[in-house]
Length: 185
Image 1 (cartoon, rainbow, N blue to C red):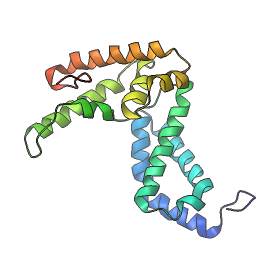
Image 2 (image 1 turned 180 degrees about the vertical axis):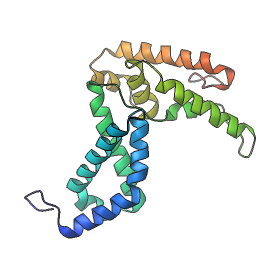
Image 3 (image 1 turned 90 degrees about the horizontal axis):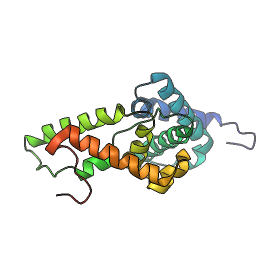
Image 4 (image 1 turned 135 degrees about the horizontal axis):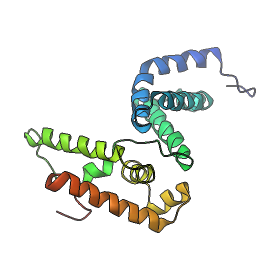
């Protein structure tokens, strides 16, 4: 891109190919972040690809999977930056999976564990607007309580109390097959 912020025709073609190859996947990710709000998801994808156009000289030489990762991260960052004024973002809570009991590969328990995780995901998606972004930022994005507090403009103790309350709620609703508290066996 030149100094006038215009993308070259060759870069535009490459970016269009990138869009054709991964926009559907990025849109799906954005839909999860936007709690199924397709319009908001479309806005997130558009913003991510606009950012990609600005960053194209550095993205062009990357492998396809690296570009996808960059786009997913960009969508997440854009969504999280919007949390200050709204709580409409979500994604799969990765840390809940980490805290779940280990399941031997090939066992029938794998399907059961996946169902439990999906239920956990559903419950997190149904959290009140104040709790949901806190759970998302902690368990999906791996943010520390102080970082969450700074993004949302609330006290760190409020973040800690919310995570504790939500964690206990999930454990109670999902029973013994649900996520474990950190350090529990």
